[in-house]
Length: 358
Image (cartoon, rainbow, N blue to C red):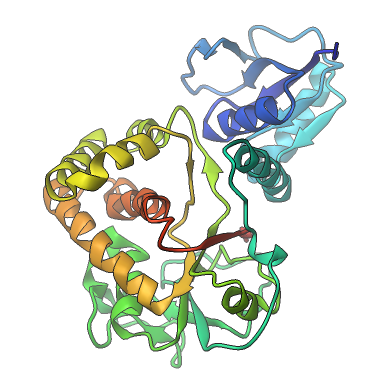
């Protein structure tokens, strides 16, 4: 009989709940004693059956237990000091790299449990060359990177929302306001204005979308591997969210936009609706509107996707909150994941990790 391992998780929001799901699935002998926090945010008393404790109130006595920090990295140092003051010694900040390790281990075990393979692009074999470009989205409003990053040979920077300003990041950079475009809608559609531009104007056989802070982690011969293994699409390694993809969205954004999108699917894509409802009732999706795919696959995706997000934007209108106004992009993240799950018999998908630059 295995011995129960007790741990704490610092944080009570999506990062913390995602880590809890990973750990409990990977290590059934782990028991999460509590979620911890020490700020003024309002949190529930429990998440599931796990208590949520404020450190200024209920102080843990068993500080010999490990504690995992699941907050934004900028807060890790001060949280570590706070936990040390209480008496914790086994403190593990969940960095992007550690999150990536847990996520991949979880997905590998999960895919096996449902009788499927978990194809990572860096584990596939290689072969011949094709023309390819991953378009890296930037805008004049982006904060400068503190970490140095050199673009890969296949990456091309593109200025998003160029129709909204006369400023140019560099003279030679591609902009999303030339030829057929929706650049003027960038404040609401964010990187989708670049996705639209790629759909209508890019000429490469294989095209991708990334962000100036988020890039795919790929083997050097990834194009050859795609061709040899007949891979149609590369998506980010899926993210686990709780309590479900749908409820997670509705908790973080305006639920009326989600409900309208689902009504639209029921009305216009009746054969897909029940599968969409089932997919969004589960916990995994590939975030960030990042992808790499064959150009003809992109065309098929966009012909399906953009009528949905245009319709949703027509219903939801403009929102005063700058972040929440980007809801067409938040909806599309979930829709793209559903599309490739729904049509998995048509497209071969592989996954790749991504980085996050500060």
